[in-house]
Length: 587
Image 1: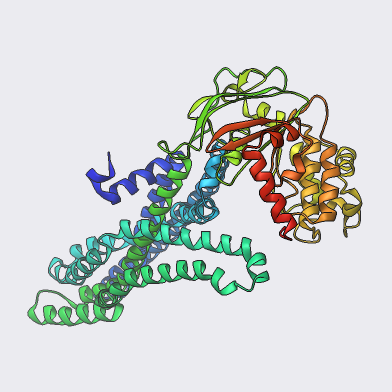
Image 2 (image 1 turned 120 degrees about the vertical axis):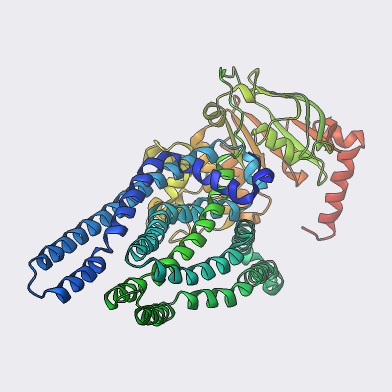
């Protein structure tokens, strides 16, 4: 059913039910045990009242011992049931959390690479960490806590109605007032929880973005301006939360006072005394109301708190369900293996928005053993073209093929063992340098890792680290940008891809690092390998076999460097612009 037809609350509940299907049976078992245990925990109070009534009639009555033993036995069973309920719920949560995290990793591992470009790190963190934690509370605690909080008042009122239905009816009044106040407070709660998740994700994203860029912004003395997005996100969260929680403070305070122990005790003793004076009740019955009635406040307050936590969990489940529905990169049911390393584009059209193509009518063949450079002004589509070659996304029209097989028909594991990439921004994980290099081949031994590092001209720097190859990046392995880039090149060398896409890996390197990186990249130039270079600095690709010039998402020129200069077209204009900038002292 649609959200519109049933409202957000019903949609949230259905998403929770669907998500928790693998452990639904164990949750029901835990709930049943908790219900039984909660009811039995009232036995000492009930048997205590019965014991008082018995001893008042006859202090020597042998039945008193039986009542006392029965109360103790029932209490022991109740405690055991609650302990079992807690155990079952936590075991269910452990298995569910493992299953859920594996599903999340598996689903995100199947997502198109472009999805990660469009999705913020804060959103992924919100789902994979915060929302999983919220659902953990739902399984391990909320259901059993709600059961205990609901069963206890029900059992209390059943017992009180058996003792004295008139006084029990009076004791319902505070509960009715409390329920009305909370219904008003909880109205629209599901929509608020969904908005809560959104504004919290904004805060998470702004924290990640601010942390990633802190080095750059501090260098330019713009920390105040750079933190503006974070402050704005926090302020939006604060404004939302106060706007949500503020109006609830007064009714919540009143509601809690209405069912507070003092209020219930005063009501039971006051009305009980009056009923005794009228002859409608007796002192022992009033004692039962005084003792049992005091236990109503805590479970009812706990019930409301648990219901609020459940609403939060429903919002988390909704976001997790959406994350688990992340679109998969289409995989052929009958995958084919490419024959050779020729990359071919035929009639390729692609746009991030359907009516606004970034690339249109791209036809080209990248021959094995050649270096092809792709150049153009910003926004011409060169980086988008590189992403299509790496299958970040599939073209809207046309085909991108490797070895005569469309990329969409090649198994991803085969595709990404055949195609490698080195980007401008060196991305290393917070793990050992050896493990960072071995990402390309987790089974590689240390000798192969060292050989790749030597070929990438980074071996000596790694050996100089405190623990050599076992040093952890970001911990005791502090590398410059150029050094980190050479570790990435070592990773690519270990992969030994048949096709290599380079997105100007020397763009942010200094002169010394650039020379070392160029030497490392030279190790990748082999007669069998197809190499595609996305070039921003034209001086780095003058020796390319072919240069493709993109303009407006189309190939407008192609040829060798000298031929393109002689043609006096777009390439010559770009070359002159960079030459003029360099001559004027600009980088």
